[in-house]
Image (tube, rainbow, N blue to C red; front, side, top):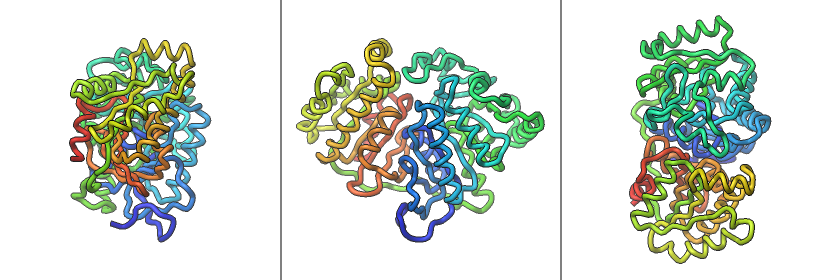
Length: 433
């Protein structure tokens, strides 16, 4: 296989350029594209000027901008856009979480607005639906399973609490231009009807359209209707229909599958920084199977070297089975920590501890690492000096195994806090056996 990323040689134009607002979300999107036959690479942070892509159809730039100040998120996203356009991208995809995590100040709206202006377009969509993971949009309202977003537990999210399920209203508070809806009845009639609705909204000078979606068939129809949009925004689900647009134009081969990443060796570890209900259940399940676990108390970070304590516990156990180090905690405990330390400070301290632990674990021979939580994943891959990831097969919808480029090569599963079945940790390592 030709080297995917390097500093020499002729670059080849890519088809789809993607900007993701966190690292696990980037992996989620990259997995979706790879599963549908696009040779996909995930780039960690802003690409360097000398980087060149070969044998790549889609490039996903993973930023750490979801919870950042809106102005910084816009600046970083526009820099990523410039690089992707320079790499020849025919279409741009801005990926955010399927729970539309954002405040009234952004970052989804401000970033989408800036990208539209830079590309010179006047219209795009917003569709965070991902039915395979229980995210659907109906009448503009986002559901998590059977619950409205605002009643799903996301209203207690420690960084971006979501207390309004109506995405037309949520996005409308973030942008100055008009936001409207492509309703279920239109989506159900297929891609042509959706395209007509897009045209009508453009004529009405609507700049953003929330699009309903209840199933994968809807996502495929939405993707087909987006064939001529220079910018598409949404969760990874709506990207499901984009590869076929390139295939229909003879730009993408048929029958391709996510590549094998080869044999995985070395020790195994789980680092869980997410406090989502899904991750809490996954931590509990792994403990019930007999796996060893070390809980990080954020308040102890102030008075002792928690990373050294965790490593002192983990290193002697590496040869036995996957070790698990977690800062995951319930909402009440998280609230107490944030009250003492402040929300941003508490999150940053945990990320830095996890990053230090990850670096030492790899030095000790860990080559299979599962990281839960977008902010934690961002800190870990940066600490490991990972520049890019090859995308492999999915473990669960939206979460593939990946393999870092460079030495030492590490198999990484970067899991959004809300994703994965209850047995995800156990199942993930079983895949590599």
